[in-house]
Length: 268
Ligand code: GLU
Image (cartoon, rainbow, N blue to C red):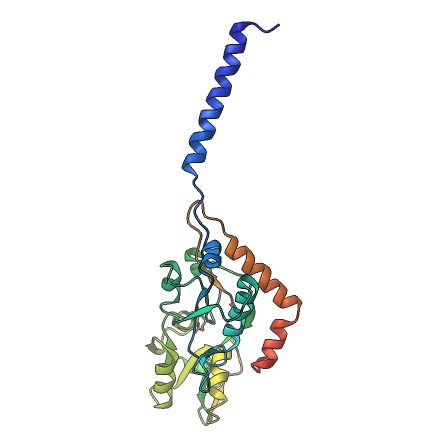
């Protein structure tokens, strides 16, 4: 038989463990996840581009956002909420998209955004859903054929893009003019403000399809994996939204949806 003294010690130990358990579970109060908030709200708030044909732009006929990124968001909404109409679109630019996400104004961003280590320090990102590459546009009759030829030229970039960073790093001698959005940047380019405009081949192709008087440089100087941006969960918040979006993107690769979207939007 156990002695009374021994029993008391065991009871004391059980009591201490119980108190510790209560205290730690009180401190770790689960925060409602972004995913659960979306389900409760019953619509998704997505930050998208409105000036980047064919990924995110305003359709002239419907006056609604349209493009590859918009189709990806619709697929996600269909999966999470059972309808591709349960979406509120918010227009974002490369310069403000991360801020709109971290402030909680939007749930996700699908805005031709490449994954980079610096961005992944601030936000979570999904699996890539498209791979683009940086290049540049020049006039058909220009004597510029490579990025080396741009060394002493004036280059238009969009502020906050990987393209801006790469140009500053690779050709620091070049004169750079930056704009916050593509509408202003392409207008400036059309008005002869720069010898070249540099960003992803995808967005430049969209512009080129309407402006055959320009041509694209043959070489790409980067790989741009487009990802969905997701806010990093708060302490004690579940990362259910990121986990679900990764599953959805993986399925979109497997079931041929992304291949069909490439065909639909005429992308290689
Ligand atoms: N994909 C590049 C980036 O994330 C440039 C295109 C853009 O976002 O406008 O910065």
